[in-house]
Length: 115
Image 1 (cartoon, rainbow, N blue to C red):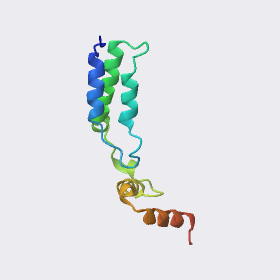
Image 2 (image 1 turned 90 degrees about the vertical axis):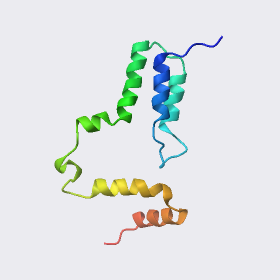
Image 3 (image 1 turned 180 degrees about the vertical axis):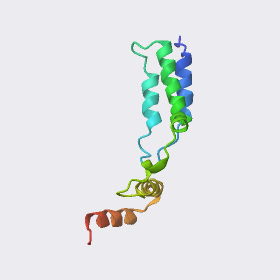
Image 4 (image 1 turned 45 degrees about the vertical axis):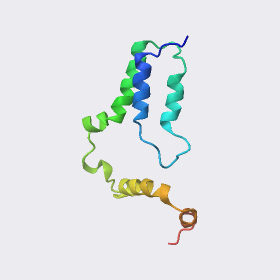
């Protein structure tokens, strides 16, 4: 007879199903690692503790902390490099779509600096 799944287990798996895919490293997905952890029997965790973990997953999915504590002002524009975070986001968006040749050009360009 199969062991009945707990309510917390169902909530955690539902939250992980909604988790976005990582395009930078498609072979290793965060939700797959967590799913394996939740599928194993909970060692010493009560139902309430498992529900708290599922709630934490939902809060990260909903960007609850980003909404509660918005980042404003000069924190995202450091004086040493004001475009750093914008450049980082652009790089992460472009990286999965680069060809092998484009990746090699960037690698060589990063190794050789002309000043």
